[in-house]
Length: 408
Image 1 (cartoon, one colour):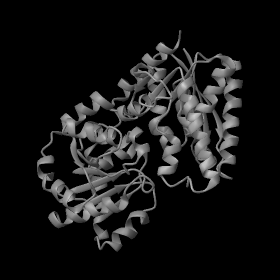
Image 2 (cartoon, rainbow, N blue to C red; image 1 turned 90 degrees about the horizontal axis):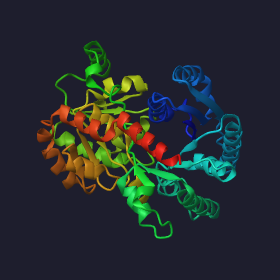
Image 3 (tube, rainbow, N blue to C red; image 1 turned 60 degrees about the vertical axis):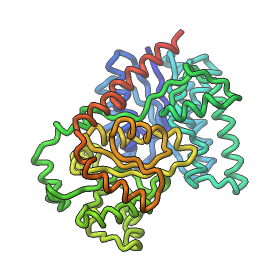
């Protein structure tokens, strides 16, 4: 099978390296030929192109990078859509693809164009409700006539993608239910396959971490073996409820005054440090580290428990936080909020952590009282859960089944 994989996220971006390339590598092991068309940010591309090119070449994955443009807003995106459509059409002329796998909405413009123009089966791997994410995240203010028009346009295209896709991938059952309940779409249950964001169980494996590496991290961070460590992994801002996570930490300090807060992020620490100081939280107990993907498993292995609060808005019904899969693969229990994709259902059903129903001090205190029991959770059971629900290999087998079903 010859597949064109279109992604608006670059392969030289951290997201491309964690959430695209591992899947492509695993899928390519089944003998299928992949061509990747991706939009690369110039700085990341210059610094990472040799490494990514050699990695993909090793697995016989053909890479066709184009340049991502950022400015001016909206117009740059239109330009990028045209670029992706043109390159997809040119690549199909040269390679005659059996199907086009499109990651999210911008990529889907190329896939739908290729289907209408050349009859190539189109897989819409939607990732989330993109137009609503932009509004819910405060990036598109619908009171602004321009952004309102852009939102309306993308909602129309969303409908076209869903109606014309040969198959649809949703990250969550919750998101699938939303789509199936939209009467104007007439989607059936078997039109949509749920594949959550998964983790490479070999990469996120406590058994692969060397004791010398842990000693070095402890020396660097000042985290002792007996310290209680609340961790946070990932981006800050937009979707992530910084104030509420700090409020939880403030309540935790009342019960565990020396608890450390390890924040593993590439973002500016001031996003959390400034509000922490305003809340009189002792920032000397907060430890910020920016690490490579290779270093993430060892760093998060210091966690006693990991925290993430995500805005429970409509668009997040389709969200599957990658961090959940990665943390469970490492045997780390989580504390999260309700109303985000399938997260609360999974965590509660499988005793994988604690779910906060509302962002109130009393709810935080109730959860904190349960922490000692939570710490008795068998880490191997959490890893088995991750293998059952979030294994990269399992996800790729599902993708392969979808591919086969699309080829008539």
